[in-house]
Length: 483
Ligand code: NAD
Image (cartoon, rainbow, N blue to C red; front, side, top):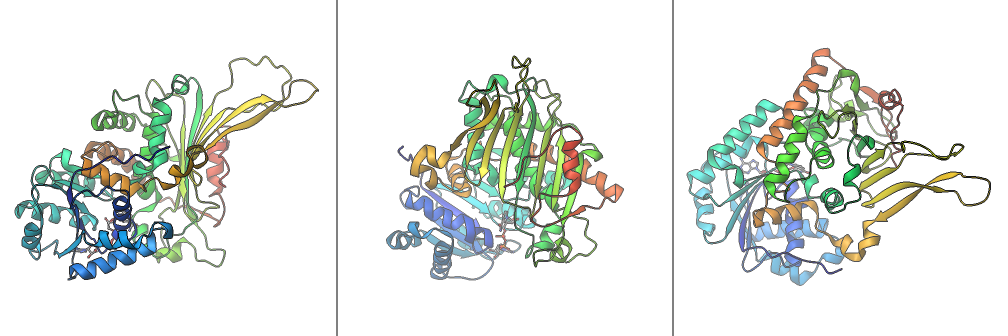
């Protein structure tokens, strides 16, 4: 396979919060990797903008340190790093005041693509948008990139959309959900819409249920105060898992085009039924393994915030009526594993009267680790003694199937930033999508808050709270093992 790098135009990219954690860990190392791959054409530049005073040289040292820390050693080319440094500049900016904006205007070029990445607290989004316009820095062709969280409920998301809409039109706003930048997540669309094999079976008539799992082993230690105001529902389900659900459930868009794709996702979100209280299980990890529990990490002994959630969702439309979608995500679980498992129904009639060993076909799409796909199919167990069935995997690990190229795919952030430069919004959330997702999430959260529900404790290293197992058992189903 030959790697293809799609050229982009010359750009000036301003990273507000360019000295922050996200910029250091993801955005700037990612841009260096794109530079290595030849995707920073001509004299494209990156301009760090943050509160502290720095010279260009100081900013370059900071970025170099980030590259040495976060880019794998075999990609650290000293000559390339030195060349990349020449593309970096810095302007000290006060998002809430007037300092630095005149300088930024002076630095920006008007004859190249202008993009502004808001890698700062969401409370500053409005201030930055306003000043970019007030100072005549961003015109109608400029693009802005905003980070999660996009609101904490419907009202705040609407307010944020309204604030941004005062200064930018929807075609200029790129709301990041980095899950959409993951290779395997985009593969969901390729698998569904570039094969004839799956789509005819992709409906409740043939699919018994869908499981979406995002399991993490990490705790919230170090960012407990932030996480305690959020919880698994806001942090994972409303955005990332909702996007996965949409890509599995949506109708084929007429084209791989930003609005065509987002229109179809929006229809799925709007077709989601309200979730019943007994279809939700919330958990909090206990202390164990020499580490504190959630309440110690959040520094809130009374915390009712969930570090785990499992729920059963129904989509009321023609395709999915009768096929539940089970979602679960949590911290401090047995393994770090993200996957989507689609379990098919029984064949309508078994010709093997005495056949033992029959199990359902399952299509598993692994997001991590070992990105790949696995289709569980039935075959005859070899040997004499009648017809015995065995379930075997048709297993495809993308790294094996696609060779070294698969290991060198751009990280989610890199891909998404390049899409911003290209002006392609397909993998970004539209304002109405985010609002619809909150409109579904809000009553669920309001319900447990009104009831005063407490999350159930679960042991670190386990697969989550006991009640989550029951959520499946009572439907005669079970969660797949987290490994
Ligand atoms: P951070 O606190 O590490 O960095 C914040 C940056 O904003 C710093 O560069 C700081 O100088 C700048 N800043 C703060 N106040 C300013 C002001 N008044 N004027 C100008 N600049 C100012 O934050 P972070 O972790 O990098 O997060 C940035 C954004 O990304 C947030 O919206 C966060 O929710 C989101 N996010 C972060 C992560 C992550 O892993 N860190 C993951 C997903 C989303």
